[in-house]
Length: 470
Image 1 (cartoon, rainbow, N blue to C red):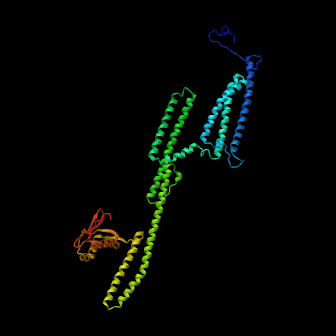
Image 2 (cartoon, one colour):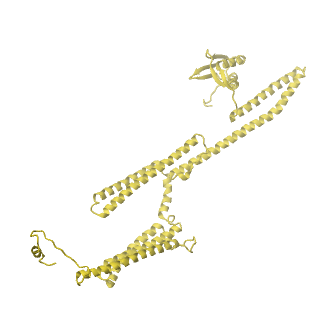
């Protein structure tokens, strides 16, 4: 551009004002050999080289991906298509140690590569190309190291030793004893402290990055990354807490079903994790034990009832014969009073034995729940008074005074009259047998809160120096 361009603009100003225009035109055919023609020629050469280079990059990338996928499929296999995996000595090390060794070796190679590469580049390339080749050497080292590590991890994965041969798994296995012995309170408190600590660190980091995010692009990227990680972490923790709550609801449901009598209930432990899984197994063991014990008890009761029924039946057969023959002998009208007395005793005892046998069968039915009751409306006051009349003579024989207090009105209850009479008979019989002579037996009947209450009290003939429970 001419040095005195300002004066030319003043001279060539047709409008005679301060608004100047400078128009520069370039002939794109570049007829003259000058800076424009030289730059244009260099641009055309660079453009063609760039197109060829990008085509080579695309072709090379496709080839690299194909060969990489092929190597991933074949890496580690002893024979093509076989399932046997061959591990090198470096693959048999702990996974974490292998990663640390890879990082240390990569750092050392990068350190020496920078100095050795700089000396080699000074021999073969111009100084302005050194930064480019320095980056090429650095990326080549990182790529080679990543490929070696990647294929080592692939071989471990195929051999199923990537996790099993790791220090993390050994640490988790070693800590299970401590975790298993920790109570829910300790575990919850520890998790809460970790949650508070991680959230505090994340919030402080996000605030720091938010304040300085306008200074560097990396701070902006880290701010959004930390925000996403923070939200995702809290969401994952909420999901874990919700999952634990659901698992405890399942445990509560299992315990409720067992408490309601479903002793065969089993909870699926595959849906549980952690201490909840152990608790689920314990509940299943309790359920199995209860169900087995209940079945054994039912079986025992059934066998006992069957035994009583069978024995009673076996007793009744000869007993019936004895009763019949005693009856036949009594019909003979034996004159000997001594023999007649013997027959009377036989008759009484055989009838008594028949009654006891029937009682035994009834008790068996009652214990097994097979007794059928004939429930009807009964005047309980009248039933008690009838019982008093039945035992009046027996009480007199023992010189016992019966003091009875019953309501004046009727007292209707729902019961089996025949079996309720047996209950009262047993109570009165005990009073006759064990009450002290010349004492009183108190019988009270009253209505309390819609129920009929019967009470019988007597003074024991023998001292009762025993516990109340007995």
